[in-house]
Figure: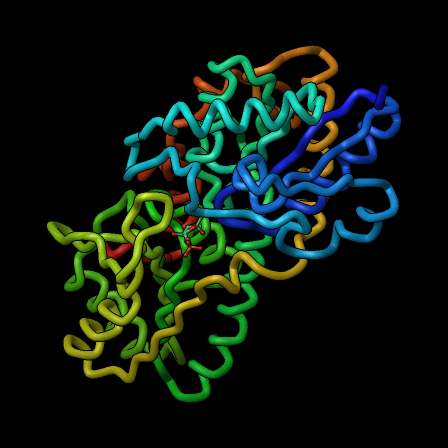
Length: 360
Ligand code: F6P
């Protein structure tokens, strides 16, 4: 008879801090005498050919500072439960049944699913099919309402701030305008926090449609007033007034890939002001590399919290961080409630108070 066994998997886009969650899960399960199986490449590891590895204190040692996930992840595959903004598709029943059987055959008594809203929707569907799951929310976009913060966000913001610091010196040397395109489909948290901490002069986010005319006027006012540079941060999901999302070829978790708004903004600024303008797309640099200390701590707290939810048999719940405390909320209530930047909120007001334009 083997020890009490639990499983863990990481699903959807990766982000810094996943390994901190895995390490903490293994360490706290170990203190309870439990064994942990890590399913490889997300939910795919539950399907034929079943793929997992036993996670131990030894093979999870030293992983906290490493970006990505040591057990891999899948964004597509047979388990996609999301088909566009707010629309959820159900996973076919034979897939659910196969995953359930794998867990039963292996004697896995609870499964920790670390993922974003699409992956947690899948977790909830498994729960409805009597699979004892608990969730750990993950997104660099920080756009889940049920938790004040998700790990990976702070690391992404740090990356944006570092990029702006670098862009500032080259922009100032050439008296240029620099446009930095960052991630954020429906929520502008990365652009807003990154822009504030990196000294941006304008921030364009999905929640506040902007006008090219007013943005260009802001740029011109600054440059003709003697500013040596103007830094503009634009979220990939930002929209000009009456405009549409700028998309690339390809689909991620049932959604069109976003991108291209940065060069569009640069083009419009150049046309309207004649100022030399350059664009940088930060892309997946925001998702790679070592997590910040804050994300390491949050990831560790989430890992410990997930094991505690299992101990308390709170299946169908996910860990959340609210009022500086880790607690549990039903996955069903947590997914599908986007946390967007309030256009009249304190963060936007703070930015405006120091002269940052939102292109309005
Ligand atoms: O949701 C996280 C996120 O990083 C978004 O900000 C971005 O639009 C998307 O994932 C990118 O996905 P992919 O890695 O598939 O290009």
